[in-house]
Length: 387
Image (cartoon, rainbow, N blue to C red; front, side):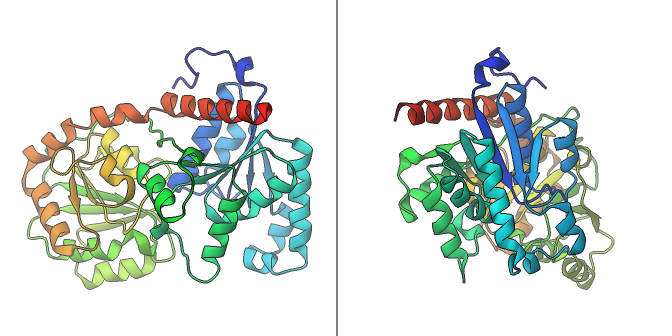
């Protein structure tokens, strides 16, 4: 993969110091995008570093392999004593950890702090402000429906927003919502799409009975319950694999057993490289109640899979119904069941939908994504220097 920016020399961007932050390095879509973005920017010559709460997660190995500087908010010595971060947040140790993080930011003096996801942004952006970091970017990667605005959630969002000087979004729908509901000025929001690595092998869509795949952690908003209910009503032979982990995993397994789907649905747990699974399937399903720009759809398309998805967030910018995929309303089990049955019984439809992916995928190359981040950072940096 060529990460360079149109032949620019590394020294051209060496003057920029960009510090990123995220909660952990688990196998979530945002985490994958962040790590690949940081690697791409480093290879383009930008001085990059990472802050995260702890090193847990399989993506941490990429940080080490690419020699990316990192800082742990929770030192190993503290994590060794307790893995319950809620205890630490409520303890006398927490102010010390905040000051330690503030000192790290102040000492390294980045030009830009770019925080990903809400709670990390709530923690880091105020510290970056007091550490006099001129450019503070909040990466918003979900619609408001994906944010718990009950209790302290609204306060957390408003606080993070107020300390940000700019925002990046990975879906135009998120930008529109921020402008209309949160009254964020449009000029403070930049859309940069997710990046995707094209698969080296394509799926055989003529395998019978066809096998579907859904890659999603077992969280309430991913709505596995609707998928299982729809599958329980399908009258055709099929297989389905569910990839992911999460707090609702056992509940969903029991539900599959209740619906009598044990012989059709497989639970594969957490898998880092899902491309081989996409390439050995015949269709992909996503049943989320809310999404920003789901990586899983791009990955499925890169393997030549037709996709059935709920019509949420940035999905509508990826899928044109009955052109390159099938869209169904959120929570509509009947429509979902009908779409799955169409895909199962019509191999020609599977091929027709998959043929129309190439134009979409051209907009999501990593070279393009890294180039757009570089352009944004250069623009914001030049504006900051001139003020």
